Image 1 (cartoon, rainbow, N blue to C red):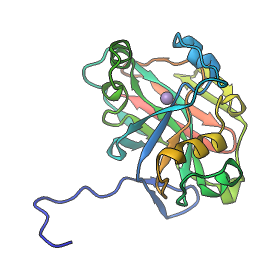
Image 2 (cartoon, rainbow, N blue to C red):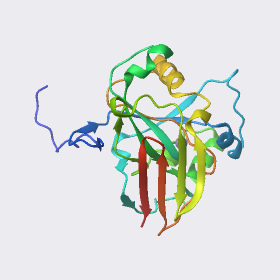
Image 3 (spheres, rainbow, N blue to C red):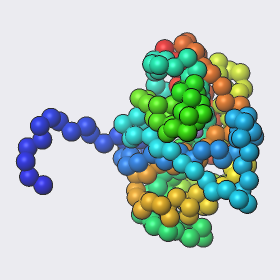
Image 4 (cartoon, rainbow, N blue to C red):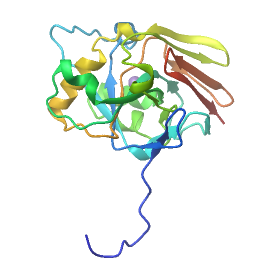
Length: 232
Ligand code: MN
């Protein structure tokens, strides 16, 4: 490639790795929609795994922000929601990956918050329009340090919880995912060539709700870690 860049390129977004000085550079951010029955139900939709396939939306890597951050209430919304999610960090390339081979692509795991402008998402949904304004906005993809699969083993179950100012709002288990991690990797890799740096937010359990200025969100996933976000 030749030619001088006309302005400085943004450096890659990177995520901390637990117990390591090294960092994980983010390539893409995939998010699974409606992957817990009880959450689909609270959103007024039903999911039948026998007749439906998982679906996805994406967030720009530039919208990733570290756990422990303080963020401003986002513009153009009056219904800013938390969604606590189990995040899978891909570490190896794969296309049309068989479920039996899916674990090999996983570098590690993290806690994530799929922060959502719910009013804008629902308005788009009702109009049959893309969800970007509701989902893909600045600082909307919060992530904890990544724990490596090498250190914690393959995770397919365990408690996932979220509290706002100490009050429990979400409490479920990863084993209630409608499409589990292996199924998601197999399905998603039919549509995309998965690459190291791809993050997959696997969906939120029930109990989503609003936060307002001054509140603090704390989440945890067994064997993965904790995540925090403060609304300024
Ligand atoms: Mn979500």
